[in-house]
Length: 325
Image (cartoon, rainbow, N blue to C red; front, side, top):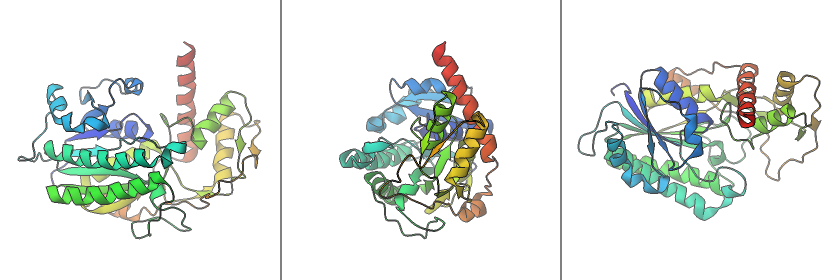
């Protein structure tokens, strides 16, 4: 397998996508960032000689090869595979709230994932990397790895599981390397405002008292830059047909994470622990088994939660400053 020289990335504007393209560029890898037409978040992606921004929606990936060509991004073809070109599919509609159980919408995501495999083949990619989720497992009291039975409990998890299985077969039919990841809880700059970490930081910065559960859940958090680095390494040396869980491999009570956030923003602030009831299907233990990820790529998490939280707080502060100005 030739070393990765260029990458096509869908869904590049979230926390993991931004971290991925930054890791790729810092290692001299050319990147085509595929953004939705008219995306306001595309402005997050800064100009770089190694980066090409291309507008293409998930529902029009059959046009991606032509749009890459018009933008000057070199690809191969289905008949002439281009060594060193990897396709990362992070794009997904409906990741939060009630949209997770929009069955028709989630089913469309499976189609878009297969369309992304077709697009990767048309571009002559050597490998295809897909991003799944802890939601594929449902509730499980143990470390998560590829051998743990998957029993998703919402449409989002079901669709991710289906997409992972179907894209593996599609890639095999095309002769492309297929890697599927199951990403656990990620935090960091550019993360969604509704996540526990971001909503808690925002409340504390605004001088509000965050309402939380009792925080008894044992949880695995990984900084977004580490997640982006893991994906980059899998693009270079992930094994065909394997599933890799991406996380820190360690747990702490959720309450301790929240207390770390409070201490970084304002040690004197109050937290309303127990003000929020646990969800009916609350997961109480979440941890990734990253032994395969480490063995195949050498990956180790490098950012302590306290350090990653400081960077995340500074990001949110800068966002609030920019909104005011």
